[in-house]
Every structure is written in structure tokens, then in C-alpha cells.
Length: 321
Image 1 (cartoon, rainbow, N blue to C red):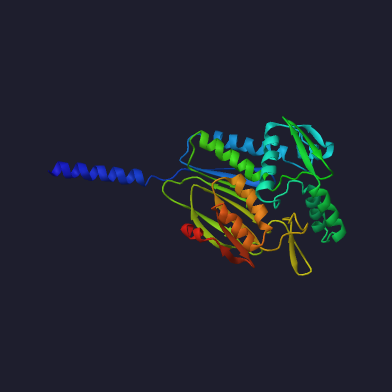
Image 2 (cartoon, one colour):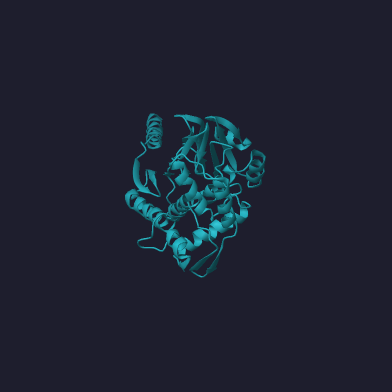
């Protein structure tokens, strides 16, 4: 009997020690898409080579989606805007097709032909200037009359508008990175693509604690306990200019041509970062009731901030509190 008790105690101690085994966390960072991207692995073998594959995915989309300089190895968005047509990679074709799908889905609140207007505002905000109403209306007319033709891998821009895929490229690359991680059975990770995209795998039985940053102050306005989800955020935090007592950002309303000013941050919780990234950009320009209807129909949870504090959250967010 004594031997049996000792054997049972030994088994329990072994079980306890295996459960309390320290987590081996390995971190990797790289710079792509104007962002420091980090990925953390938890008890994952060969994490270094896995991180290198993830890095390649981001570099690929960084080049093809770039609309500020010509591609070195790939025909990219800049090249297409300059030459008006060309043969593109499979990755760029699929990214453009997804952008057009999101334009339809969001009723034009995400418009990939906003390129000229977006560049106009970025230059104006750098100089603390406002574009004239006439200039904005002219650019809106150009944007609305632009479309494209896709023939296999040959794409042609029709009209004077320029493509801008910056609102979806990082989320799309993050989604592709997750697809790769899923394909090799890697589940214990946290993929942080800057302030706008986060993909959370597992960490044994624990949740990740995610703080949602205030836009115009340090600290967080809300904290989530979450795992095995994606979060996409649109915020004026990284790019904003104060003029005449108002904050203007790079996040434009494609229907008015002006920076959206209804919120300071919008975070959406879901499963697919590419869709969430598109929706966070589109919904940032919507009025609250329209946003609630749109995201409610998609069964997505979301959190909004204004004046550096919680402004509104969907009911399901409480499950992550």
C-alpha cells in the first residue's frame, strides 16, 4: 500500500512538473511595409526558419503593393499607375481583385482608386495645409470615373485615377502569413504587424493580453484577453496633423474626399485579417449607426474610441474582457 501511495505521488509530481514546464518564447523582428513586424513563438521547433518564411511573405507584398517607387524585382502598383497597364504577378493580381471585391462589399467606402487623392492629402498634411474644395472635388470625380480591366495577368487602368492598396496590403500579407503557419501546423505564436494588424495563435491554455492604444495620449483605453483571433485597427495615432483645432489624418472618406473624423480608433475582432483590415478602413469613414449595421450584419465584434477613451463597443466584446 505504501509503495502504491509513493507511486501515485510520483506520478502526480511528474504530471505537475510537465504542466508547469517553462514556456520557451522566441522573438523575431523585421521591417517591412513601413512597419516593424514581430512574431513570437511559444515552444515551437525550428522557429527561426519559420520566421524567415513569414518574412518573405511580407517582403513580397511590400514590393508589389508599393505605390511610391518602382518595383525592383516585380511590376508593382507604382509601375501600373505610371504605365497604366502591364503584366503583374499572381500576388498583385489577387490583391487587386480582393480590393475590387471589398469596394463592392463596402459600397465604395473602401475605394482602391483613391491613390491620387491619398497622395494629395499626405503632401498637404506634411505642410500643414488644406487642399481646396475645388481640387478635392476634381479628384473625387477622377476617382469615381476610374476602373480597370483584368485579362489573366494583364491589368489595364481605365481613366485618370491611381490605385492605392495601402489600406489592405498589410492585412492581406498578414492573412497569407497565417495561412502559411496553419499549413505547417504552427499554432503557438503571436504575429504583430504594427499597430494595425494582430494575429493571435495559442499560448498553451492562456489568453494573450492585448491593450488597445489611445490615439493621442500614451497608454490604453481598453484591454482584451484573447487568443486564436485576428484584430485589425484603424487609428489616427501614427499619422495626424492638428490644424485649426482639429486633427486630420491619412484615413479618408472616399465619398467626401476629406479625412474621416468620427472616431480616433476602430478595432475589429474576427478570423481573417485581410477582411478585417479592409473593413476597419471602410468603417472608419462611416457614421456610427451605419457602422453598427454593417459590422452587425457581418457578425463581427468591434471597439471604438474618441477623445482617448472608449466611445462604443459591440455587445460581444465583453466576452474578451
